[in-house]
Length: 408
Image 1 (cartoon, rainbow, N blue to C red):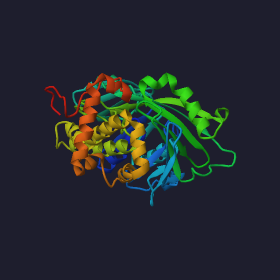
Image 2 (cartoon, rainbow, N blue to C red):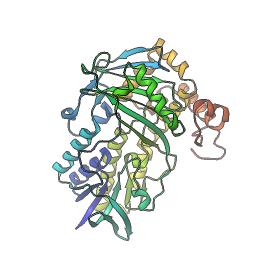
Image 3 (cartoon, rainbow, N blue to C red):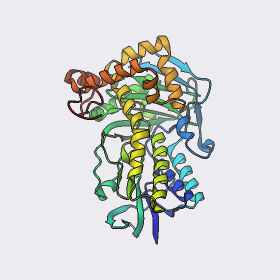
Image 4 (cartoon, one colour):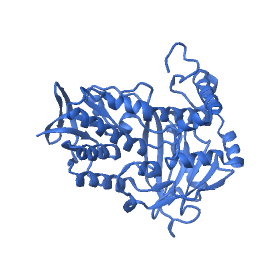
């Protein structure tokens, strides 16, 4: 059978793209090499802004509603912040992904789970995907196979993101989740170049992890042990220990190639400041479906409209997030000291998590601040000493200043 769309990868990006494509009138085959439900390394936090992109409630799989945050700096100097309403819905990725796949099936998506992709043929009028159980053909393809996926490479599309790495584990307190974690999560900042430590409460256990730039990978196990001890737990009680990559998109990295699009982590669409990718996954999945529907209907010659939409609407947010990330990791202790006294960052963060404001909005509304952020971010990127202090080892081009003939 010839499908209008073959979606490879059934995480939030892929299942969203598949569901939306069917609702717009396309026939869709959703493939994933894993059987579902399947577990996946992830903190499992769905921000309110991400949940609001879905046309249905995710309450059936929400285990905690987060309204507060406990911040520490290098495992000391803690203080708390609270908000009047929900900020993040805590889930387990196995349940979240299964829930989203079920919504796609309910919409009419055909699924083949537990089926890996072995080869991709680019045809004059579509794509042919060779899987573990045969060959299938589609007019278009959505690559949604995540941070470690190989389908882009099989399709002749080169994606070379920057990488954060993380190591996480779980602990089940004998008496269940206690205060202060009933409705709050914890972040420990400033201890890892380019990242942070965290403690996220689930229904009956806590997820504890730490991550940063790729070069900190060899030190993460020792750092996790220290973080677990700081939060009052014994490393012998940890279970589900695993590491993973978080791809950060490089400027100019491919988003579409003819009749193929990349969405979510496969395209590196992770928020660098928060290391959160579910919002971008759902956003890009919805955008892909819109442009695929136009292509299938013969209204456009290719899927470049998807690239333009992501570059116009989502990439600017990720770019500003990266600039804030650069600035924060240059002097994390200073920023935390300011936040302790003012709560300025907390109020902005709450609005961003709830989708009431974007990173770019902050830059537009506070132009002087925006200019400073852009200048310092670029200064870090072109100054070896500042790059070392900020923990930035992978090359990163400036975005506005010191362009040396480049266009923004």
